[in-house]
Length: 228
Image (cartoon, rainbow, N blue to C red; front, side, top):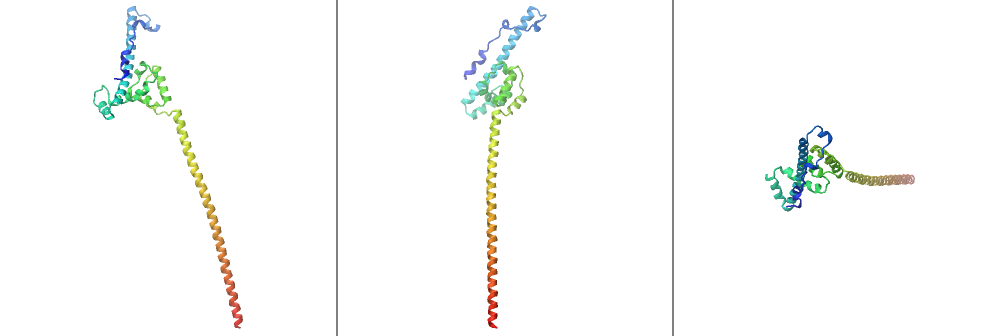
């Protein structure tokens, strides 16, 4: 059993005498009616605190259990029907504990948060978690849809990291292109050099052929002259 087991037992039961009612709520009421209203508020506040503490304690207990049994046994356990809720709810509560235990949320803040929404918030970015806590501390309800939307928000640090990664990727691509451009330019120069060498070779060959033909014609002409 974890150290969080005593959370529910430590809940302070509110006394009706400690309740201060707003003036607009008590106007025209008798003393007995006021006493009943105070008792009702005290009971509701205590019950809500117990409900939030029960959720917190259950998250802690499930997280503790998962840490001491094999994963295969954990899966069998949450699907066995031993718990009064679904396997998914058990998994959500277990996964939420590491975040929930360090938050500033009170037991009363947790009453408007389902286990599914709790898990969504627990796995959201720090900025999104801060937004969720603000809603809950103001007494608002955080639905699963709202928690899902928050969990999809990209944090500023994540955005910076993503931007840096993209910039690094683009720079690497640019460097590759620049290297390829350099290789292409080098190849162009080599081609121009080969063209020039080929042109010079053709010119040399043409000169050689013309010289040979000229010499040959001269020799033939000289031979004809001697024959006369």
